[in-house]
Image (cartoon, rainbow, N blue to C red; front, side, top):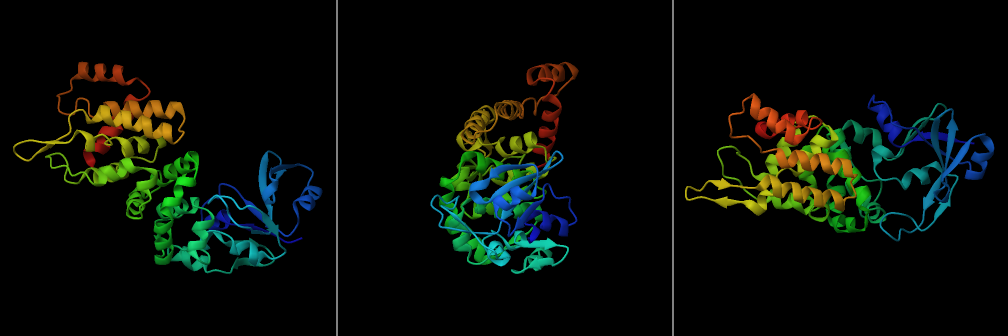
Length: 340
């Protein structure tokens, strides 16, 4: 039988990164794969995937396939097995993920994935309208890869992505939250602005769009609320709790903005409103309760004591309110907020 490592593990190896997992594609049917190996798990048998266990580690082995029609902008109604590696690679999302390798054939790159990887370009395999029409989650994956690899999205791919953005309503909240979190935890969280430009955040995170449309004429901030939000994410380490906090810490500003006689904007009570909105957003995205509690706690207190002279007693008082676990993180949040 033929067998190749394929997809993300090939991409990451070419980037000299340690792959998180190794996916294998083969012309052997799932039944044949199960006969070849002693320990297997039917993890995705409906789509031709069998997990082969080697010790405690599992390797997903998927039969070459052609996807049938997609009925829900996420999953094909049927899969058709094929003996052609080229047909299998042709159904994949982006050129950088459509490369395969084995020792006998070497690198199999039929769609220019290696060149796109070198040029830091995200490009769909084949017709981008078809690719995004098949699976709307690919919209967020394109943006996430752009952020993780500091890559540009090729023009036709971006245009198709923008046109397909409304179909993200069909994607589960959990999937959206997973991709959004990967994007903002990447080395380039500012790529969220690309999602805004494409109309993606209007669908999945309208709270951010409101921030992008809210100016703040104050002595403390030079940028608008949305731009400040992005800069604050860039200014803090890529911890999940911290990046989510910075993303949502000013969600309340569009609702609390007032302007005094001198033309200076004020956002009284915005931290409390932001915490309430963050809780609503995170619950909508099916986030776990511990993360919701910690993020909302940090947001609620992120503005506390900013304009007060904090002596040791005041610091201890604030630490008691915030909690021992979150207080060190609050200091990082305040530093990033000020730096942005």
